[in-house]
Length: 113
Image (tube, rainbow, N blue to C red; front, side, top):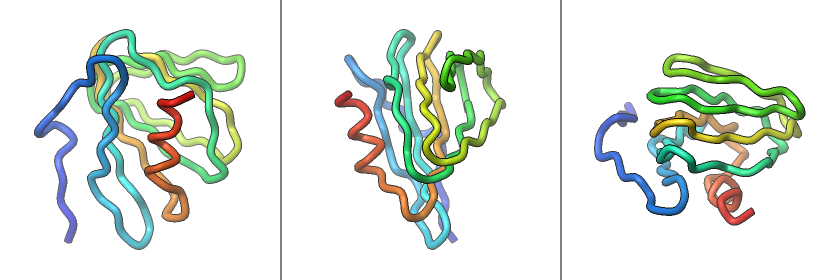
């Protein structure tokens, strides 16, 4: 059994979101992304499907030209190759579920865009 908490040991980055892998197993990778208000992940995409859940806070989530205000408890699923962007309108914690073939390194690379 793997166990982790999305709400324990929270660290906020000064200039960019903090990405922390919490669980990796044979079928998924569960990642916590912690945003200060005003921080963002610029437009990007992945070859694999993803699921994004807002654990705490509020995220301005953009998909192509559409904008969605996601609040705590909201969850969205995207197919691969869909351009999206996240902007924290308040301090937020996001759960990102990756396909097992995707990588945490790719997610960290988004911060360098």
